[in-house]
Image (cartoon, rainbow over all chains, first blue to last red; front, side):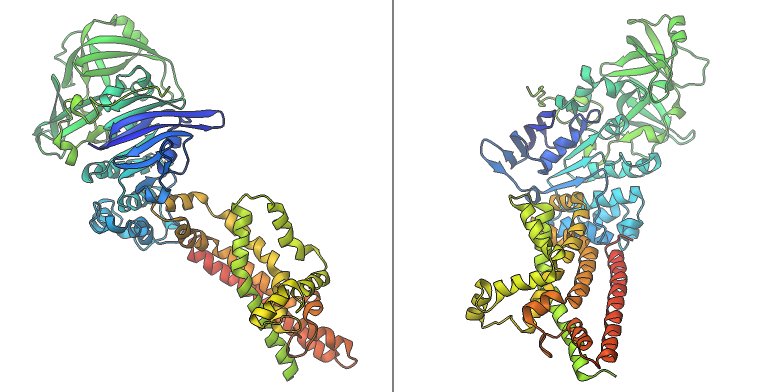
Length: 401
Length: 229
């Protein structure tokens, strides 16, 4: 399979990016790290907008940069599509001409397009916008147009540099499903920069972890999530657990669906997906309660048995979450639920590693938003087994030094 | 209402200014690009040279032109021998003088417009498969258009009004180099020319005001065209 290889160094003032990534060129690879960790620098290096000090950048069969062989492919020949944080639409062109900007310059690739104009316009719902100018569009609309423009350039790789960061929550929710669709409906590898945990967990199939200019881990999502440096992805205010499963049963009478996960089932508000469709589900830590015995006289239907693995103290944080304890409860070979409880409760229940207990998850808490659906192309590989995700076994991780 | 000589002066002025603008525009865009985008040794020298007509007395510029472009001058001699083109005492020479005098104004306006162009948009265009030249013509130039328009109009007005460099370089030949300004000057020198001078002054005024008005109108249209309003 084609690979994405980025092995470069680049100094910018006192900051140095040391990047060592070698991943299969498929799915959506999220580049995650705090602001200033070097994610956007990496995007600029791959795009050719910044020149590495040394190293190699190879995308599939195209060598973008190789200082040993003195190769540097000009930006406009790299056949990329980039979605920037600010949409960067051309103000003097209509939406239609913005969309066609890259398409017209794609040459032979546009003759047999992977992403046709009509298909992209339909997918992103751009029909009503075509004759308008960028300055009359909302932020979410602009980002959708930018997405379409990048897609229509028939890129070999789509780069997205925090495409949702400048949008407010409703606009984010508007654009996010489009990114999911595009990931699943076009056979197009995507490199996605973000520092938003929710986005990464919802969209990514593979993950590269950045810290102070270094790639600290790279591999499939579940693999990298277990990395000790991935703590920000698992904990903090946005703590929650990612659960993989598939649709097992629909129960229209109560408008509920049953998801089969490894070793347990979950009842969730009904999802409009065929049986067997793989899904991933994020269970927020604060939506889970604990019981020491199997409770029978409570309203909650999702009761999952597990063993406490770790007990963490969470300090109050900028997001306004008060100090609390977080129990990490293993409920399956590959699944650990995060549970937020008050310190008082933790003491009363005498929570400690090894304790067997029951996790209670309210069905209504798992609203459709929390369901990240992996359908379309991704359905070919069951998400149920995280190890079968791309890049699971052949990703190379290094500290670049 | 106007005598043929006065009409001749008006027509000549417009002609000279127009030729000056048409020829200096591509040069001004190139110079603005050089000054705004490229770092090279001697850049401040070029910058100074371009701005010289703003700070030197126009007569001095006219003198330089005479030295350089006279039929025996290094450039003028070559033009005359190779193309049979004589600049001294001709309307082409008048256009050259007007063009040189208005050049810094044009470069300044275009350079400001160029510096205001969002480089990120150019980068986006590059990633979408556009070469450097393609980016210039499909993104940079359209976005500079308001500055180019206002630069042209300001330069046109300045070219229309030049006096010192023109009279020094090409003299005051009626029907060939006597533009409005020179005609007004000549009329004020003759004892019974006051009324005629006043008529030409009014024409100059009308020209200047309509140029400014047109500039405003055009700039607004262009801004709307490129989606900045």
